[in-house]
Length: 243
Ligand SMILES: Nc1ncnc2c1ncn2[C@@H]1O[C@H](COP(=O)(O)OP(=O)(O)OP(=O)(O)O)[C@@H](O)[C@H]1O
Image (cartoon, rainbow, N blue to C red; front, side, top):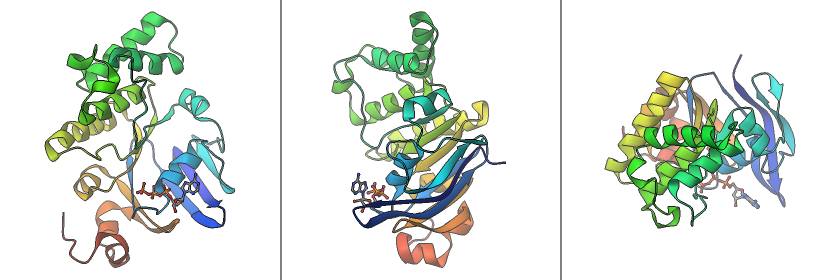
């Protein structure tokens, strides 16, 4: 059985169909990539999964339990955590304080336990040298890692990543990709990631879903989906080779 299953998700905003009967499923310990043009509905899918607003119809099941419409702080306690396309740290707090708060919000038993959890997450994301820096002053690439560190401090079993590589130059992307691979290999973290950078999709994904105008246009193994003529026509472009 899949760890996370979305069935028949639909969502409209004032008549605009942002999601149309979307089905996705992710097996434990695997990574699902979500691709599609701007406005395809990818972030709306995350918002509906994470209870930011409920879908008009459909269900989301985590480990066999119906969690449709459950709020994100409750989902975090069940092990499902997301990162945002636009980072949302507390700007005047340090990196260490921000990550500690994330650990506390997940229910770390004490301040001390939260600080220990934060130190581990900061180490994994290579943020040690920034730990005492004010979060609002960080370069974009470091803020991205802070967003990941906050998610890791919540000890996710399922991690939803919204364009974690956006705004990073290639040299900055590599450590993030390696971190995600380590999380899958060593901790068995299940991930769904929205991404426009195809080299990253190809490298990380066990399976891929391509969305178009709110619907799933293609899904399956990464090589198959990226070679699908419908996907090339609708999204990747005819000049796409193996970028
Ligand atoms: N809260 C909202 N209220 C009204 N319309 C919305 C809302 N959220 C999303 N939409 C609309 O739903 C459609 C899907 O948007 P969504 O942000 O999910 O796309 P996306 O695939 O994540 O795009 P991008 O790659 O640009 O982030 C768009 O037409 C968008 O304008």
